[in-house]
Length: 85
Image (cartoon, rainbow, N blue to C red; front, top):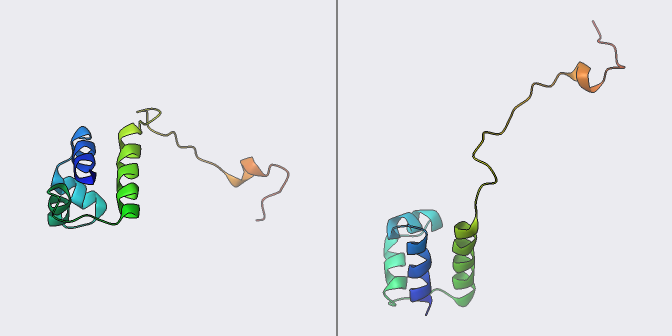
């Protein structure tokens, strides 16, 4: 069951096994073993991985516009304070 869910989630995101292994910081062989049903991680790890992939699939940036930056001067923040010279 986990093997199928993992592969389905990975391919839905357009990720290769190598990309998933890089993202999870595990060897590619581990991904191959999980998807090939040779090994299975503990249930809590399965949930964490599938939840993380689900969040990744549903995440969409609010905007593709760059975040604006502003130059802030102390005098603008504290106009009543006089600058010490």
